[in-house]
Image (cartoon, rainbow, N blue to C red; front, side):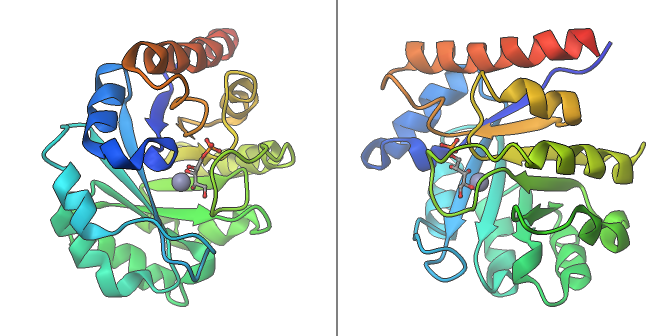
Length: 227
Ligand code: DX5
Ligand code: ZN
């Protein structure tokens, strides 16, 4: 039997004026992980939040904190993200001149190490750092904004990454444009975890978040059952 998909709501799509309540709501609504989109206004045009806010949110939920660093120089603050309570720290391959060192550092800090790949970045960049990796984050939109359309050409890349990973214990996570309509293709290609922002934080209350998560989970299960 294949395992259930991990669903990681991205709080980027939540109401930032009520961040604590929004996290409580998705936690209760069936989220597996909480996806934290850190943007620096340099690697991506947008700006969000950093370690102090993550630290404040750590008291709200016991769920795994999945920090996605869309920043140009992640090395300078890795220790702060670890101290703030991030469980997974994912850096962009395009932002790291010394990716091997950065991934090792994340593990030395006691966190799980992830690498994110922009849509144009080839799957094989993970090949020579594979023993340093706990997670590969495949971007299915160009990072920086929520609510963008899923890029279908990424499905083939997910399958390629699945081949490279082989039997290793590395999570394949997919981020961008995930809905009940797109999740099936990424699960079929080998995704273990999906991030969803706008498809989950829709309807403004816990009951609708629960329905939105359940819809994505059901669509993923249908594919998993057939695999
Ligand atoms: C995009 C972020 C995503 C984003 C996904 O730069 O990394 O996590 O919040 O949002 P949706 O699900 O709306 O595409
Ligand atoms: Zn993200």
